[in-house]
Image 1 (cartoon, rainbow, N blue to C red):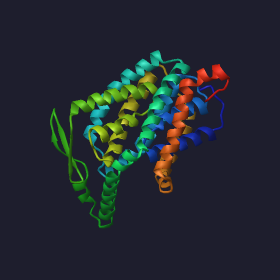
Image 2: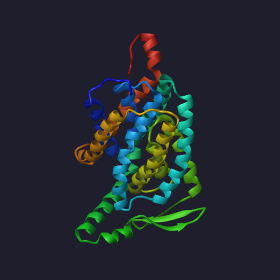
Image 3: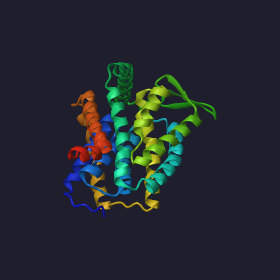
Image 4: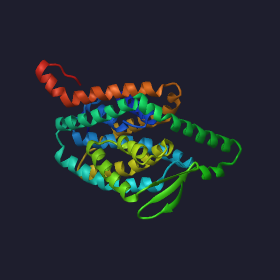
Length: 315
């Protein structure tokens, strides 16, 4: 159905790579899925690329949310509010993209600009000032994880409820919750609006939206990083599922055998990613990923111009 002829090992290997990167870095899974569908596999249908890219990246949240929930590291109410807004945004973004961003070349150029923005964010995260600001959070993560391990050994897992997320106030104007002895708050209406914006942007390009939600929660809401990932992927699961359903309702097609191969690859990569992370330098991985996305973004955005001027195809 996708109109390509390829060895099953190729989509499996690329999906495995996506699963590893997404589970280790926590971002760029949807972007790499789009790149794989266009430049590695050669899909020519823009709407099929968007739909299948979001579908395969739903696998990682399905695997990770139960684990985060077991450690009580998901602010479900916030994730639900993000998701409610994201559902509306996904309906708007996927409808507009399916109707007006049908041409693959036009989609590639827009996606290239988006990818350049993501690459810029990753490069920013490599800056010494940003890295220094994360040291205190990293120590907090280690303290929480050591408490989880200690309580498990001592058979006191029930006491994790004292450390995990616990909502203490819920109103129209403010929600407050505690995590590991600290109190945090957010405005519910702001969360819905943010989810709406993120859902619209991410569904338009066929990506997840974690790249936008994670900085929002860390930099704007000032939440600790160890509750951000689980909350983000939970909300993305809602908006991405809505986006996929909307694309299908609007007539987008899916190559189900190809999707099955990719799902198997990304699931295995998502399970192996945490193991690989023990032998990887996070900074190196982010630097390599940023350079790859920078190359892809430049190629998708300016590739036609370069090819017309010098006859060289960038990507």
